[in-house]
Amino acid sequence: MNKKYLTILIHLLGWTAFFIFPFVLLNFPSEAHQAAMRGLRPPGQRPSLLPFFIINNLLFIIFFYFNLVFLLPELYYKQKKIRYFISMFLLLLLAVYLPSFIKSGLIPHAANFQREHAGRPLRDMDRVIGFLHFLIIWCLSSIVCLAQRYRRMEQRNKEMKVQKLDSELSYLKAQINPHFLFNTLNNIYSLSICQSEQTPEAILKLSSIMRYVTEDAGVEKVALDKELDYLTNYIALQQIRSNDYLTVSFNTKGCTNDKVIAPLLLINYIENAFKHGVSNHIACFVNIDISVLQNELTMQVINKKFSENHTSGMSMGLNNTKRRLQLQYPKKHFFALDEKDDTYKVTLQLNLA
Image 1: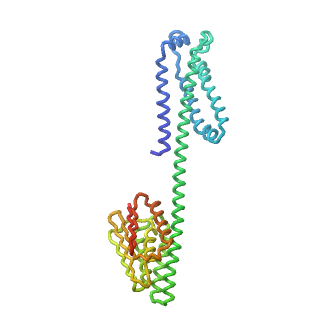
Image 2: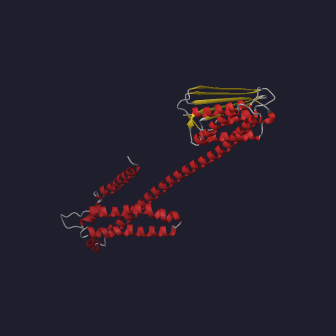
Image 3: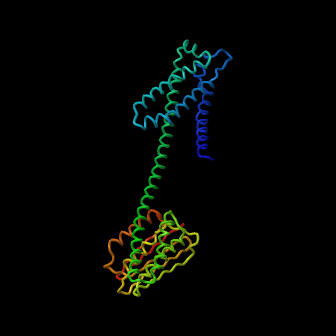
């Protein structure tokens, strides 16, 4: 059922239940009230309270929504509290004194009886009932208004949180993309200096990579196959530029069909391995293993450690990626960095579900 109509139905049922109960009680008045009411009518004639009951309750329903929709939002919550309490006082006077006038006009002989017999018990009882009725309706409308404001504030806070996360993710991606482009252009520049025959192939791979970065990676999630193709091209570029001192192993296993992942999330660990774990003069290696078992992705990156090459840039890159993991995979990831004397090992596990 539509939420709007469900709310209307709940209000109707609530008002029905709220007003039926006191109406039933009015049909079973106390002995004192029965004795007093006998003076209001000629023998054999029973006064009907139904018209008074309907009009009185309609007035309180109007007050409920008037307080809910206008008085509280437009006066009280907009720091016009003096006007609000003056309005409440005037409405309270109406609630206390108006029922007696309504009853006198609707119930035959009520006015004559009250003038002849002082009528104070009936009038006092009507005023007490009017005051209690006003107090209950005021409390109910205030509670409903407060609940609505709280719900709207919660929704607004959620929207602001989502906007903040989107902005932060965009900022983190903006940090990653130029960093990668800068490294890759340096690679191709090195090839062109050496007049390598692999330069055209490197340019084609860079074109494919940049197409992915600019067209596909702008969404929240991408196909895992595309992300792996992106990594494959990047690793191929690194191999083209490197010499025989570097040994690269890149293995993937498992079913990647129909799996999605946040784009550009894995590249930073691989970038760091090539940037800080490769030497042109000493034998080195980069081993990358990615496995997918059901919805669990596990990536291990192991590279040789060159302590003099590990700068603050590596820490900044890892911190950016860790922050993205917290934002995009909260409580659905595991990250570990194992540093030994001669190797670095990064382990990342993601729940892709």
